[in-house]
Image (tube, helix red, strand yellow):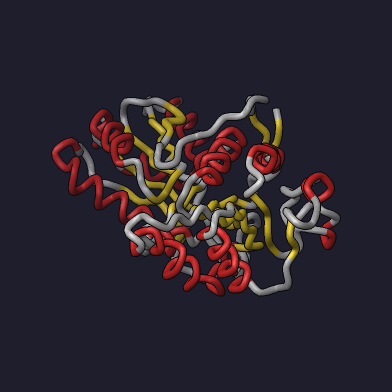
Length: 320
């Protein structure tokens, strides 16, 4: 059993040993935080690989992203740490209008094997800054892959796959997950990008979740099981591209769908998933599609398992 933080550290260490083109770059990832980095993920990597492969930078996210895209185009595999997802706005143009489009605009001749790691999400409800779930901003960018693990196992496997991928990947780490522990194999492995995972099988309703809130969905499923409602929980894992097949297969089985995410409901990824289900599986539905997300307020007020239970019980008569 190791933590989410340790799982990420193992993935970085293994890939840096395996491939000399992999290097780490970002603010405060070197000596400033005693080689641990802002989230503690970098523990021991500076001492092991040196400051030519663990590069601490000035505070300038645009320069970090822009230079890393250039390095990736010429054969390197940079893993960038942007301290908070809100800071991605300062390098938005490089990531969305640069790295994400280069492969397509070059007709596949130029690869951009770049990973940007960042922490996001609400750890203490009510915070107004640096607690955003802004994944939907980036899922709208063709060519950019967006990943959001929920367990230590998935964190290590998905980060390994992201580093090996030839396209830019935004790797979102929920700040409340770093200390969560779980089973992680000692040997190297990867979890393929673009493949969702059914974390709990059920027959009555499909809950589609992502990131930390997957655990809230599993808690809600246990509560509802005691009330005779059998919930299937699908963890998206990769938000772009979405795993349409797993989503539609699950909804086709249960006939009911609830999309559950920490981001605000308005404009959140749940709207896209709901539209997909409505377009491709309308005939399978036995109840309206529901979305459970945060309210449209400036401070972070993410939903929890109780909100999900209430939403599903609201259609309990339809389920029955």
